[in-house]
Length: 613
Ligand code: GCB
Image 1 (spheres, rainbow, N blue to C red):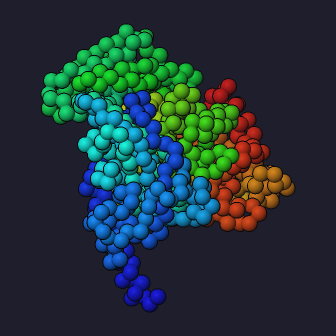
Image 2 (cartoon, helix red, strand yellow):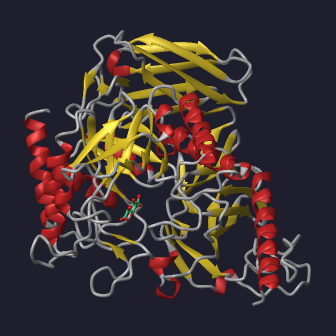
Image 3 (cartoon, rainbow, N blue to C red):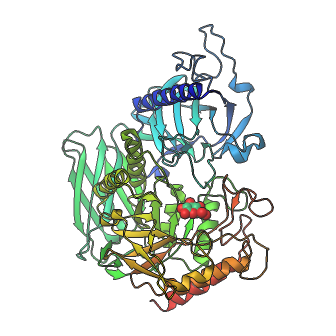
């Protein structure tokens, strides 16, 4: 292709994608908090799918969005136009799932897939119905019975399209367009070290609510040790003065407030004899919220988390985060994790390791993970996919990242386990990036004043002293805006050999807690050799031994989340016989076998648990 043609077609594609994104902004879905405790009808299971690599269902031959010809019906409509598809004759895929691991021919596929499902429904008077999608990677458009319901951008957060007026009695059908083409202006952007699993990757259901209903709320223990719980409830379509009741039966609490003109009722009440949530005592209370005919239940833990100098305080006491990083990769079978069993296996391994903390990298994981972390007493770092490079100067990219951050916070702000929101991973130190991330940090603090904000930074390494000592300095200007500093480093893997750790010292420009949010190296399970031989379990174990010795010397270190719990698929990892498209930095293989480094870290965590540093 000539350079000019290339530029032209790139511009054309960019314009087409922009139109798509703009259209996506047209019909905004909502996000119903506590989706998993609401009245719902599952739409999981088999969906008919059409693979549409050239996006012909969406665009005509001039790449203009089709006015009347989307694959929105089960078959082409009666307009007489020749549109060559038929969902009922198309094969099926399972939802939840990702198409890459469900069908061999789609292993490397990135593009559009159309999903269709027939279902029965009986409308109920006084009931509103929402089509809930736990996650669709990455861009989706939803139709019910051929009529547009909503659009959503972002591959890892849930959305709910109101379909009350689109449903009929008896047979109904939903069509969902899902496109996972990587885009320079999206979040994440073109390059990531994880598989771009496409599809309806989490549960899909119909959620029913009363006419006037609670869509969002927040309850948290107030900082300062006074034992009071503060929060609010938002009621949709509630006139000002609508009563809202909040009950915590186990504590004999029943509180009443009224909505304001925005439908929001504020609460602040004392909770005597409250047991605080902690890893040692992950106590959850049943909380009931009653308003406008809605009656919601949730299970909420109460604790405070704050920073004092370079300490992280949980319930007022300094805590050390014995963690590990995780991708949402399914144990044993690979592909996107989504089931209760996946969550139990992954967090079970973290517990076995002696962890009290997980970094859920690099995007929001399934809500099952944060629910289970609540129950198991595991603190969580939750992150948005602002990874490596992003169009820092593009306002649409900032709006998109902000939206994904707000959706992540909204879904999980009542989970006691979540202590840290992370706004970025390994981003370059430039003025445009600083402004972008400062804006995200402000959004996180405004939307959730009860938690800490962090980011995984890269650090500067000073030249070696004559004695061969190097100093790593945390001096990224972003540190000023963060509550907790995260730092990724790969001494012994991308940087020198493992023993380099013994000649490395750490300094920080900030009087703030530090979490080493990544370190590690690759090892193929079962490959043995000398501790100097890369790819062997011994080499990886040596990295962990040397790192632990170094980390013990950092006075402001308050936690670590080495990279990573389990091997995960990545298109960047090709080495035949060793990687085979897996990043092998797991402490556990993708088949669940524990490598030697698992035991090294486990021993360290066990020693920390019995004898806090
Ligand atoms: C990193 C990234 C992580 C990669 C890892 C690696 O710094 O944050 O996403 O997977 O390194 O293995 O290179």
